[in-house]
Every structure is written in structure tokens, then in C-alpha cells.
Image (cartoon, rainbow, N blue to C red; front, side, top):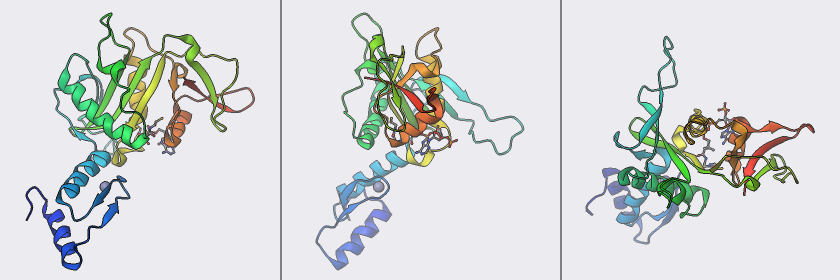
Length: 250
Ligand SMILES: CC(C)(COP(=O)(O)OP(=O)(O)OC[C@H]1O[C@@H](n2cnc3c(N)ncnc32)[C@H](O)[C@@H]1OP(=O)(O)O)[C@@H](O)C(=O)NCCC(=O)NCCS
Ligand SMILES: [Zn+2]
């Protein structure tokens, strides 16, 4: 029996081999990975990728500086919060937490079909000794279950208003946005619990030292379908025409 397989994986290899030795390529409907169900290394890879995408990444409590801790609501037996839920800010000076966050973002970029090389603004220190953005990670039960990366927008011409319904840009109006939301993601099994909303709030309050950014100053970049829904709930504004607009940046 090949080493490193779980008993579940061993069973599926055995039963497949009894009927046919031809590899069968499978696409998992939950994590969307394509793999061969007769290859032990594929099965193991799928198991690890599937777990990351659905449940997040195991996280050491020494990684990141805690910026928000979710306290269970007093007297509420049905609180949504676990007492070990918190948000950390990642320091570019600490290679272990940067590496762990980069691994998490690999899953995010895979899911969004986004470029994998847009991290320097939060993961590196620039020539003048500062950063061009921040990364925040949401930890629940010792797992990183959500992440947001935001970049500082200094050039005021980058802001735009986008009509939510049509995705068209409003001409000639330039909102003075301060933060660009580069990536926001929550693992599949933890969605619809306001985790993304709390990540946005931490980024809004903690990204720029001594400055709380207004919600409308947080701009989206080509929001995905679920990103548009989140933007609608979090920081859309109603135009005089009745249409909903969201702040964007290019
Ligand atoms: C978008 C995403 C980050 C939302 O995370 P989340 O933790 O589930 O979001 P929240 O629970 O904070 O959602 C807040 C509100 O946004 C809206 N919303 C968020 N995602 C939604 C979705 N997929 N469909 C409909 N409404 C949605 C809802 O109004 C929700 O409020 P409600 O729970 O009271 O109905 C998550 O779905 C995700 O990771 N998607 C894949 C990556 C992605 O597309 N990122 C956005 C890139 S722009
Ligand atoms: Zn899967």
C-alpha cells in the first residue's frame, strides 16, 4: 500500500483497481481541483488542497499582531462568536507570518483566477522604510479562515464610481479614495457569518496609523460576483438617480 495515504484514500484506490486500471480523472465539485483517482500523489494533493479551500489554513498563535478580538456576547447563549476568534495584522518584518499569508493567498488567487504576483505592497518594506499596504488575517479555531489585502492609494486620480447594476463607470467624477481592496476571501465553510465584513472594518480602522478611513474611501478593483454583493452590503451609496454606486480604483 503506498505510504502517506489515509484509510479513506486507500479504500478508494483499492476499489478502483478492482474494476479497472485506467486512471479516472475527477473534478471535485467543492474545491474544483481536477485529479486522478488512481494516483496516490494526486489523492493526497487533493485532500490537502480541498481542506485548505474549504476550512482554511492551520495558523500558529505567534503569527501576526492581534488588532481585533471577537468577544462572545454576554448573556447570549447563541452567540455566533467563538472566544478564540480574532484578526491579526501581518508584519513584513516577520518572515514566518508573511510566508503563511502568501500560502493562503495562493488559494485565494487560484479561486479568483487572479495574478499571483501582487503581494509586494503588503509583504515588503519599500526604499523609504514604509509599506504600501497591509494584510489582515481572520483566525478561528487556530485556522486562518479569511484574509484581506489593501493597498494605499496616494494618486487621487485612481478613484471611480461604478454603477453596480451595469458595471459602468460614472464619467468625470473622481472620488478621493484612500484604500484599494486588492483581495478579500473567506474559506467556503465559513462564509455568510460576517467574517468578510469584519475584515473590511479592521482594514478601514487599522491600515493607516492614526486615521480611520471612511467606508466610501475603500475602493474595489473589478469585484467578483460575490465581491459585488459584499460591496453592495458594505459600502455602496445611492445616487440621486436611485442607482447604487460602489467606489472602485484603477
Ligand atoms: C465575497 C466573500 C469574501 C464574502 O465573505 P463572507 O464572510 O461570506 O461575507 P459576509 O458574511 O461578511 O457578507 C456580508 C453581506 O454581504 C452580502 N454577501 C456576501 N457574499 C454574498 C454572496 N455570495 N451572495 C449574496 N450576498 C452576499 C450579504 O448581503 C451579506 O449580508 P448577510 O449575511 O446579512 O446577508 C466570500 O464569498 C468569498 O471569499 N468569495 C470568493 C472570493 C471573492 O470573490 N472575493 C471578492 C473579490 S472582489
Ligand atoms: Zn475537493
